[in-house]
Structures are given as C-alpha cells and as structure tokens.
Image 1: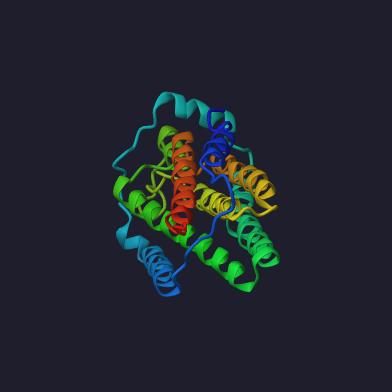
Image 2: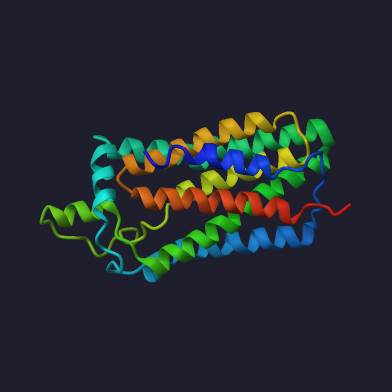
Length: 246
C-alpha cells in the first residue's frame, strides 16, 4: 500500500544528507540523560494517568472512506496475534537490533564511550518521539478502527476503554522508526561498517510493525504513515543536533 515505499524514501533522503566523510557526535551526559529521563518519566506518568487523561469520547470519529477500505483489506482474522507480533517487534526485536547491534558496532569501532553514547542518543530519540506521540494522541482523540467497527455494526461503544480514542498516531510505529533511524543515522554519521545493515534491517522491521498495527485493527493507514514519519524525523534530528562542529 501507500506506506510501503516510505522506508525506502526515508533511507534515500537520509543517506543523501549523510556527511561525505565520517564525523563525530558531541554528547553531554548531564543534558542528554536529563532530557531522556525527563521525557521517559513524563511518558510513563501519562500511561499511568491515561484513564484520566484520555478523552472518553472521540473528537475525530469518522475515518475517510479510503482508510476504511484499506482497513478491510489489511485487518487480520486473528487481530490479537497481530497485536502480539507488533508488540514483540516494537518493544523487543527492534530495540535489541537498534540498541544492541548499534552499540556493539560502536564499541568495536570506537570503544566503550562510543557504545554508551550510541545507546544514549538512540534512547533520547525514542523518548522525544514517544513524548510527542502521546501528546498528540491525547489532544486528537481519534477513535480506533476496532471501536469504530463495533459502532458500525450497531454495538455499544465502551467508554471506559482508555485506549479507544487514541488512534492518531501509531505509537508502536513511531517508536520502531525512531529506534531504527536513530541507530542507523548515528552509524552513518560516524562511518560505521554496520550502517547499511542497520538501515535495511531496521526499516524492514519498523515497516512490518506498522503493517501489523493495521492488521491488529489498532490503527488506520494515516496513523501508521504519520507515526513512521514522526519517528523517522526524531531518529534523524536528535543525532544531527549532536554533530560535532570541527
């Protein structure tokens, strides 16, 4: 569908913006750890308080016709299995690749300091992306497709579901792309041999996460496309803001 060319487009655009030679990144542990921890704490607090913060009724209720058509094509027969698979990718496999492989490649090429700097910047990118995503979700109040399907069938919509009106935009997809792009961007800036593998593997897994979120009936196409763009942007901007001026 429309979302599938996005990883390739991101990779081409970001690769074009890469420095012509290896460069270094300047990390201030006090600032970067503080930003990362602060945003992560805010996100955790918003998750705990979600029953009180989330809108009880949708502000954006009706999907455009084309998104509903895409939903009919992509929704899986077993939505629970698709949701579990997306959880595994976004919260386990992609972090392992982006943080684990990215930091290991940095350590092999630049030592322990390069490894923890890579892990910190990847984490900071994810924290920035997640905080922005949660804010937009709570303000937008878009009804999720599985809730809309119940309403379309004449069923009663559960107003006590704190996630029922938090469809825009996909948090899983945002997290997946922020992790994948930040890790690959850092490796590209620093001229690591692992950079091409991080780009290809990360973007494939992140795209799969977005598709699975639609298959799980948790998000529409626009939710996933915006999540991919927002996550990729955070994953690109955070490392480049740390580029060392020589």
